[in-house]
Amino acid sequence: MKKNILAFAVSLFCLISIDGMSQNKTRVIAHRGAWKNTGATENSIAALEHAIKLGCYGSEFDVHMSTDSVLFVNHDHIIQGTDIEKATSQELSQIKLANGETLPTLEAYLKTGGKQKNTRLILEIKTSSINKERSLALTTKCVEMVKKLKVEKITDYIAFDFDVCLKVKQLAPKAHVEYLNGDKTPAEILAAGLSGIDYHYSVYKKNENYIEEMHKKKLTTNAWTVNDKSTMQWFIDKKVDFITTNEPEQLFELLK
Ligand code: MG
Picture (cartoon, protein in one colour):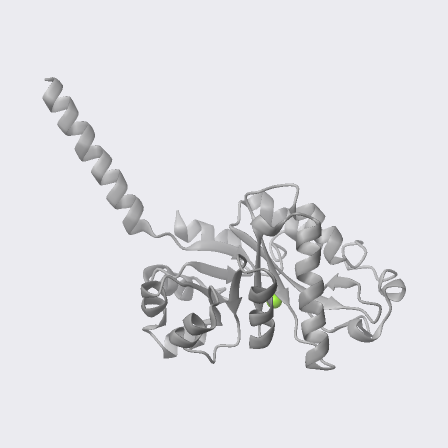
């Protein structure tokens, strides 16, 4: 009898472990926070809080730098007619988002994110519209702010500028850094010492081997911005590590 119980326990354990391994579950990243179905403005602190409440693996947001080197969270370079890179922090702090929030600084954003540990902060360093120097200066400022607020362990970095990705790795070797622009092969990402790719979904459709190739190299794969169910399912079947989406609720439903 005891033997039978033991055998049952062992087989159950194997089943659970195999299931756990084969799951290799795709995880949900809310693109600019969870805003679409929550009424929060994208990239607002409320959107981050909704992503946390939903239990997202990560919440993505975009960072720019003012003329006096203060970091602000917004998608576009221009907000309500003001070019963030050409405005002072004083001017930018007057701007209100549609939901009534003040245009968030990176500091305020990271402070909110840092109150918890379950949802990762996916920090996109935006490419400067002025010059490369400013992109690299913004990179240094972002890494410094993450260190200052002690959120290194829950922050990942993404960027379209390859040099920005390299700079993050140089400043924070342990950081998880994914490249966004879609034009580097898995071998090039590995050679550069980056952690993974975060490519537009069409790049994976053109290069169907990328996910498997990246996994063989122990690198991660993230696809943006996937909002329809059939494309989500295509990536889930391919075992992509992360899907960045405006529809985190829908992705959670599919992953159930
Ligand atoms: Mg972004």
